[in-house]
Length: 305
Image 1 (cartoon, rainbow, N blue to C red):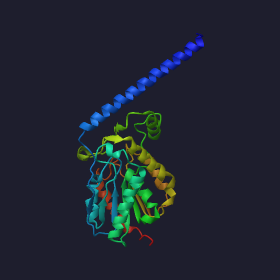
Image 2: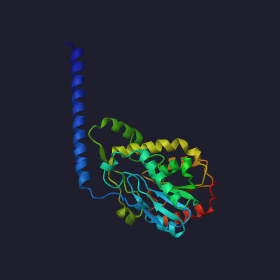
Image 3: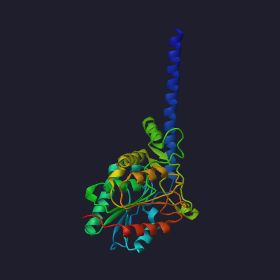
Image 4: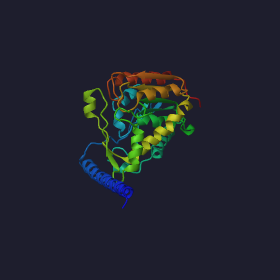
């Protein structure tokens, strides 16, 4: 046997061992995460709600990734008290553990919004409909507003997901890390989220519940939503109110600011909430935020028929 052949066999043997170790680690991690998910009791809220249904305009509230309608529990009553009809929807897949997320796709979330918009319009065909989206919900709201059939009167985007923060992503972007692992993982279909509860208000942070164990399909849908919206900033020409938290640990607030500047929205208003984290609807300053949203909507010109 020649030295070169021995070297080649050695490389093959090392590669085989590393491959076996990778698959073994993947299988063990998958079992461990599934076991932890089975013991974990906390999930995002799943119950949609409506307040002041006879009000106008109508505001459809869209929650974010691994979250639920309860993220608007503080903001919604204030908006309803200002005379708006408020409806908070529930996005398909969230709030019931990881397995219901297995079939989630971007198209399912698009259908969720289209269905709720149609229902609101059926209740009162002449009433303007605004979309209020937080985080992923902001991206979904923007996407829905670009579909002419929805006839959306205006947008309110709160810490919108235009790009995931790189705060916990060394070397590669979160999108690149996910794409790499999504190809390499064979047995692990559920991952445990390590995202912090990004609220400055300790009482709100203690009560805040999101999904901790996420099916990989949900992440694929999330990145599909981002990919669909980011190149289309200039297509929106209606009213746009955006609020961001400069210290946001979940989404890239700089990317959201850049996206805002790339729109053709009119009127357009950008607010920076320095006292709050990513979860603007529940954090410090939500009262003032609700008041600013209400003033902006009331001052916006009527949507063209």
